[in-house]
Length: 273
Image 1: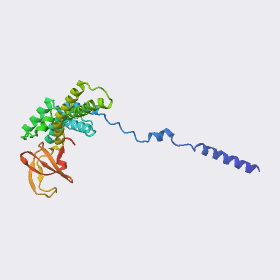
Image 2: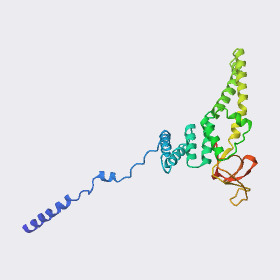
Image 3: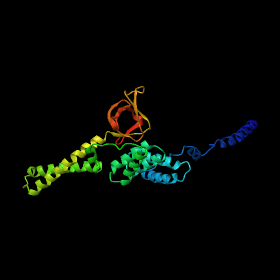
Image 4: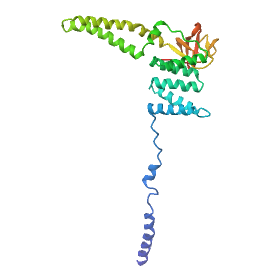
């Protein structure tokens, strides 16, 4: 009996340390540290623009011009996010020109000029680029030139306000049984005349939506919308052409001097995408 009691005590003595060692090898906090770090929040358009201007300024002092490439990247990200502004597009054109991409530079400047047709710097840059690359100044129709007098938003807002304002002044007094005053008809006539003046501009805006810019140098004009189509000629980077038809991944464009043919969409971009 004593021998059994002694063996039981000996077994308990060896069992207790073993149980005390059965604790977790690492605290829960160590497992939390093993999770991947959260991704950095993307830059806002204002932060990207500030960084692009900083890199563009730095690019002039870099031996390899790496700052210009970074400025192009940041400004393209702003445009891709839909945050179009005249300043971002104008500076994008400047940066694209610095990295020897004249087609993309002309495209950015044309878009900037669409948003703000009064900026002389953008107009001067376009003129300089075309003279430098020996490009022909695009010939626009009279109503397209007329539509360039004001930004598109101004034409659309003015046409909408003048049309509906004139209709309201003509119809509302009769509907509400008001006594029609002389100024009602005078103001309504003035608003409707303003709308008629805006109609050619609206036509010009619609027509300009088919204009685009050749992006790559020596872009091939093809007879058929296929990769093996017969070559009719070549377009230089920065040339402006008008899209007349679309088939698959090819566009039928007409450039100056009535040069027309099919081009790959990758080599061409509309000013208003």
